[in-house]
Length: 244
Image 1 (cartoon, helix red, strand yellow):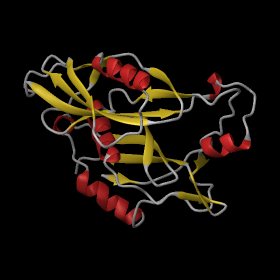
Image 2 (cartoon, one colour):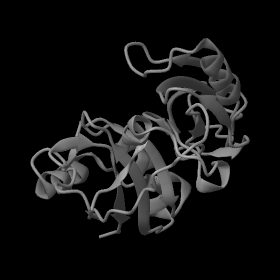
Image 3 (cartoon, one colour):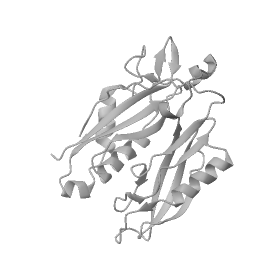
Image 4 (cartoon, helix red, strand yellow):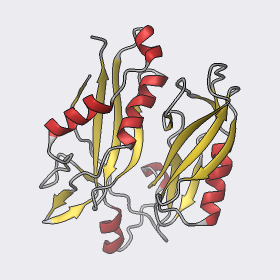
């Protein structure tokens, strides 16, 4: 299993009126299960929720053998979403998700869903600029073009070792001889925390899920620097699965 980190551009969004962010659920590949067989979503609409300011939430779910979500609660001590309306919509949406049936799973299989909230694409924005202070807060830089790119603690060699240590080849994918590269994008925030995880290119459900699981548990990175200041930076991480 190999990994390298190219970076892609993230566009500065100029929005007319109040700054409004939209939430996008990392559906399917965003749900991870620590024990039992791999699960993937088979039903559930992509959910958008208006959020201001941006925030994150980690929801622990219980899924029965038929694939129905039977419980959902926020992880204590983490996440930054406090708006009760946003939380209510998030919980209603996650409870509406349906996973593949798995008769060999525990009666209630425990999982974890990470929701992150990001700005809309250019087709959702107005052509009116907001004040410079909002631009500075909102701007996401291309990691290859900042003065100092974000870095995993200890550098690329440590990142390789980290992934080699924690990445596990899903047994179902190995048995089916599934191989390929999962491409994930993410934002390194000014304080080094990782957010806005997105599956850019998938291979197969269990491989996608495993790559996302390892990504979600990563420690904080060293943030990117521009003009001597820490900035929000978007990067991509390809994780390649190869059967030896």
